[in-house]
Length: 431
Image (cartoon, rainbow, N blue to C red):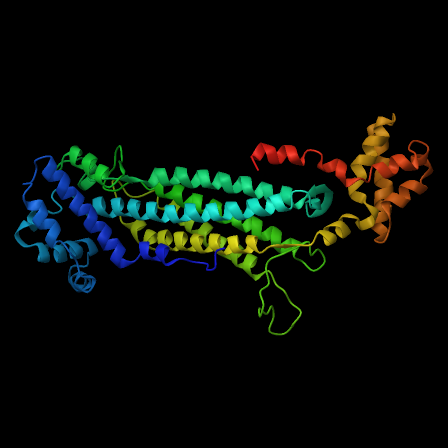
């Protein structure tokens, strides 16, 4: 059971300490690669690594003067390393370490999100199995359709979560690339072999080609993936919100001891958790749009994407981590009311069995159009009277009685006939 909605690990990935440590790790990996390939003396690397450190307050002090965070960072590191600092950042441009650093941060965030998705998957799986045969009316256009099961509805969610797991894996692979290629990406002052070896040390792939930056279609794909996952959660939460309505009340999100729903109305049990999920999904979708607008940049690079990413990458990964954890807890504590599902299914005397009656009439020789009209007339009579009864209308209709016996009419109202392939569907999903 997840007992909290957010984890400090996700936030720490985007902290200033983590950011600068990641940049330092990349600079040290470049030094090791340079030395391994003979571009700088091997004997200086141990001294550089031993002395290379940073102080965030000092970086901010320098940045206030130079107005450039990477220069401020390097200046501070160089202050600590001393003479051998001349071998740090050789042939690099700022975006080499920035973009490679973003790749490392996003990959760490993805690992946490993947774990979150697995927790949600397992929670939905448990509930789907539990309610595999819990009969519930299906709805299309918000209107009663035909019988299904609540477990079937949850199994649909489960398969969507599995697709989202695959999407996240694919998007993570797309952004797990680094670049150490210098200004405009032509390797004019650094060997491509340094990039290859550095990325190998960092467990990244080298971008096949880059300009001064890694191209932002990669990050847009990642952000759109987060938006799809958030939208799936929105979809699931919206379903719970509808099913929890007073006049439906088939499913309810957990309402804990001591919880209060309204400052004015003590009876209220509002689906606030699900509403929270729906609201936050809008934020992540908006952030995804910003990532799409980051794709077109001037020539080989401008900086318009940078300020956007400093907001949308941390915010979206932290938000989705929160949303997944919170919705998992909602699913784990979900309360179903099978008796209300049966009650709702029988509204208007079983109008949801209209197709079964129509097909039975067709099997007896009626033309489809005639059978449809006959069934619809009786269904609408029950519907419009609000307290009408579809089955009773059929039993009293001479045109129906001339074709179907009372027993045959009764057989059309058996919900079990709609569930004969539920096991097949669950087997196909491997659950």
